[in-house]
Image 1 (cartoon, rainbow, N blue to C red):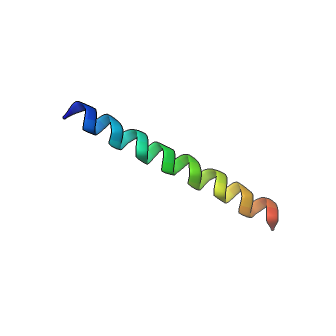
Image 2: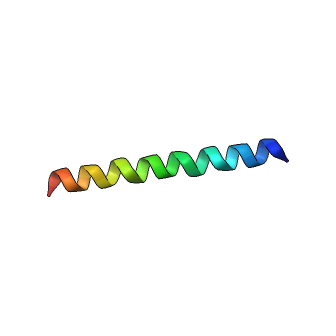
Length: 30
């Protein structure tokens, strides 16, 4: 149970990091 929760948190955090980097790239292109 705790392990699944930890994996879920890591996945959400990884997606959040990707979205932030993607936004920075879009801002730099503009």
